Amino acid sequence: MGTVREQEQQSNVIGIRFQKLGKLYHFRLGGENGDVAIDDFVVVETRRGRQLGQVVQYVPSDEINRRRNVRRVERKATPRDLVMQQIWQGKELEALILTREKAHALGLKDVKFIKATYSFDGSWLTVAYTTENKQLKLNELSNSISRSLKARIEMQLIGPRDVAKILGGYGACGGPRCCSTFLTEFSPVSIRMAKAQGISLSPSEITGMCGRLRCCLVYEYEQYVEAKKRLPKYKSKVGTPYGDGIVLDVRVLRDSVLVDVNGEYHEVLREELEPLAELKALQEKAAAGCSKHEDGACDCGNKGA
Image 1 (tube, rainbow, N blue to C red):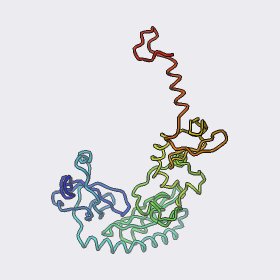
Image 2: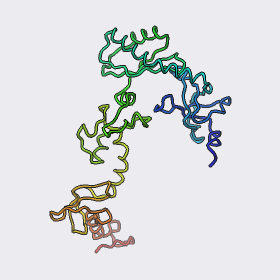
Image 3: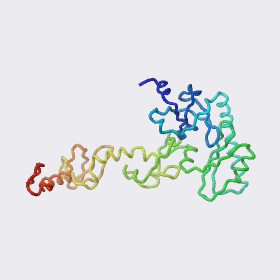
Image 4: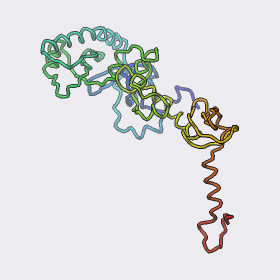
């Protein structure tokens, strides 16, 4: 293993984020940008014009061949670029207020404008909004804002999870929302994940502030699935130090089950259990004899009773 710098020099594809918790985008460095390092800012050309992004990683050399259509980095950002970005960021709230005022004047309803984001040089303004009205047209509003601010406007429709990410605040756990602190992308979440972890399916227990299933349902799901594979299922018959019984509850985190043995409840650890159903199946298979050699010329060792 070489140093971080040596590893960087082996690759000319970098991962860039345009926002602190935004998605990762890949760009290719040219020979003139060989001094770009992690945490540096670079200027790149995107479908939204020239943008300022921060380098967060170098892509491993063995993945480069699969990224043939990667755009090139235009140049390393200068101190002037960084100052310009701060200046335009300071005007974003003003742009958002202007957007809301013009929307009200145009009589637009059933729409909420969440955030306005300038490109680092102020040439492009992206307005994030949310609405349930799929027929909503914002062309007139976009043109009006463009004339007032002298910038190209993009109206970006976002979902409830993205709204929660932008607004921040606290989750049901009492801590800052995951989406606003460390999640860079949203993973698919399903009811199945809540069921696997034994969580109540009450909406108040599994729904986040955004009105969608909580992102944290994903975090321990795979661990629960793997742990449950080693434990008997609910209502299965098992042998325990207290006698044979029926499983009433599977306690994954404790690696144990609650067993009903003749009307008495006992918590039994996994290593103390005997899977009676599996043992019975093995005994029946052994007693059945060989099913492959009916002529008696058995050479597999399973000759039956």
